[in-house]
Length: 265
Ligand SMILES: [Fe+2]
Image 1 (cartoon, protein in one colour):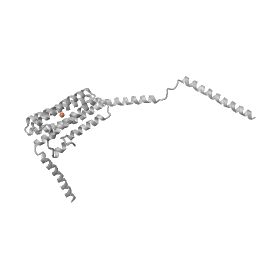
Image 2 (cartoon, rainbow, N blue to C red; image 1 turned 180 degrees about the horizontal axis):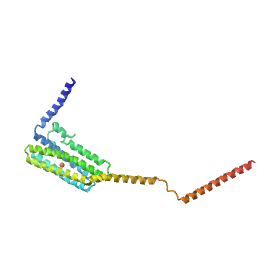
Image 3 (cartoon, rainbow, N blue to C red; image 1 turned 180 degrees about the vertical axis):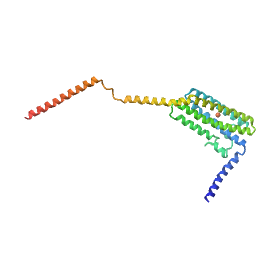
Image 4 (cartoon, protein in one colour; image 1 turned 120 degrees about the vertical axis):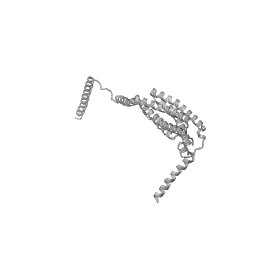
């Protein structure tokens, strides 16, 4: 009985997805349009996120590479606009009715077409920027965050290009391929920077940090140490004076005692 219920439940879920999927995306053409909307949202989110990465990067070559890719990304977003026009879509993807399984995947809380995968990657990148790191380690982290983003884009543009080719949309495929090559180039540039010397600098920066910390700790200990001992001669003199003073005190007390004893007699 329980098995039957579970089976019915699972079949129900499967059917819900199937029904929603069939409602809105029942052709490869529709799937391509959804992939393009996802990419459009992804590019928009990257344009918003890259300035923060550029600001935080300290390696000049990394800064330059990210700035250049920001310009390229803006052009890629425009290219997607042109492709959507070619596909007979309005530039503003929000105008289209949004229903179905895939639409829900790309939809934000506000109801816009929104790439949730890119939202996660960007969020992870922003969290990284808030971490307490040396500039060198931060650079290595920024490269890693950007490459995760690049790999998502490479995967998505590759898929979209394959759909376009399958649909005999050569012009669209060529435009998507242009972007795909730009993403490959960006990814390769970041790899070269990382394995070139950024990762090495991140590794050596750790030991530098330790020495810096040690320096700070040593300075602190020095400050907390008691005042330096006076020279040995001065110490001997002081001890002698103390002994004389003590003896004098004892003598004084003895005299007082003797005086008191006499009075008693
Ligand atoms: Fe891109």
